[in-house]
Amino acid sequence: MSSTGLSSPAVRIRGLRKRFGATTALGGVDLDVAAGTVMALLGPNGAGKTTLVRILATLLGPDAGEVEVLGHRLPAAAAAVRREIALTGQYAAVDELLSGRENLVLFGRLLGLGRRAARRRADELLERFDLTAAADRPARTYSGGMRRRLDLASSLLVMPRLAFLDEPTTGLDPRSRSDIWAAVRELVDDGVTVLLTTQYLEEADALADAIAVIDHGRVVAEGTADELKDGLGGAVLEVRLRSAADRDAAQRALAPIGGARARPGEAAVLAVPVRGDGLDLVTQAAAALRRAAVEVAELGLRRPTLDEVFLTLTSRPGGVASDDGEVPAAAMAVTS
Image (tube, rainbow, N blue to C red; front, top):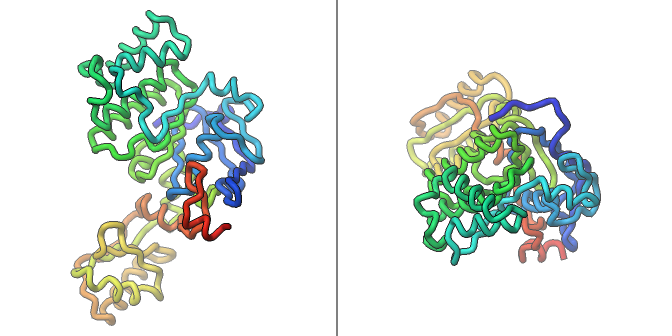
């Protein structure tokens, strides 16, 4: 990750609002993205992440607020912004009938490169994204990870100053995800600012210089991964139960000293944010669990994870827009 510079922010947003019918997708977003860094946007489905990216990429207009991208005001300077950005959406936008090389040459010509320059740049990107061996195969024969790499390569035929990556690793296997992470790091090394939306907390932890958590169309927290973790209390009391069947009893026992949340996918592991003296909390928790006759395999203090920060900061009541601007049926029932 690169260090934050002192230059003007690549993105500056103040009071950004966007509605779809009766539903508010963005309810007053304030955000700065420092040039030459990776900013990760985290949030539940429907929080407004993709709507925000589409506005910054000039695909949607804002209803209110001030938006500057690379020093250009939107929507007035949309054409100037488009010349300096790249967008990789949630789904690979490649022509499956063409080969990988043909896809890149086609996009290069559409972006104004000459025939020879487009082929040269295509060859460079095929090598950079480890696609040379498959360059002349139809894209329909590519794996999901290969398609995502080809899609990202097509966004970089003309090197942008700002790249929007909207959930670029969704559905990829760990190896393919690692390849995309390496590509993102190379972009930043080349001086590109990256705005990344993701639902993978470890992805934000690994790549981002700064993180903004969005929920209900607002930024509810912002900072580095360490700052967000420290904001949760600096430590977490983790309780590993001998039996997941005791989870409800353990949560009731721990309720008076702090809400215990089960770790996603692990019903036998509970976490309690530490708000004061951690050692005192350990003592209280042990006594409460003993009184409730709950058997414990392990109990101890550790640093919070970004997953716990995310779960603490976000919630999902109905009545919010989905990220593509469509209102889910459940939300329509609430808002109409």
